[in-house]
Image (cartoon, rainbow, N blue to C red; front, side, top):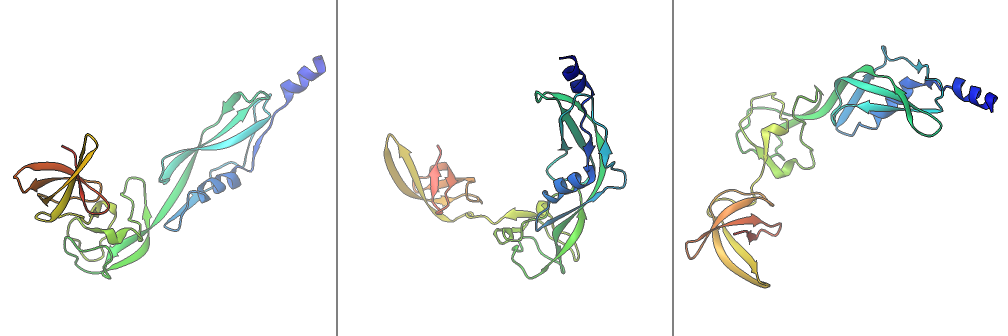
Length: 220
């Protein structure tokens, strides 16, 4: 019994291969529109484990858009799976994202499928708005005008309205199991899933939610 106890006390598992494990973590966070470079120059490849440890893992302590300085945390656990200790390591990252730029002057309201865009890999950070998804960009338009060579991140775009002021809509209402449909006129802009006031032929303005089929569901 004494020998078994002594073996358990001196047992320790070192965290080895930290650099390759850290590289795996950040490779998994890359995408066709995101590249991440990990600077391993200050990252140790081995850290001695605490007495009694039988296993370890490496966790990342950071946001959903890794960049700049982040923390990696090796964590050790004992035979019963209980945590024993952890160690914090600061690492440096650089991030590039596939970003659209204006080829020339672009006016407010220019659609996202315009040939006036060019795409480049651009240094980025979590503090900057993300670039738009190229496949989704046709459903957006410029929120404000843009100058030549200006990067057009997501904060420069807005969804193209599915409904505009004066547009005729079919308004449906469901009450007590009955479904009623009337025609109305949109009083503002709205995207699918958004809300807008609709004026009926009787002069009443009803708050409605725009449906994927272009109809308006009464909320009032």
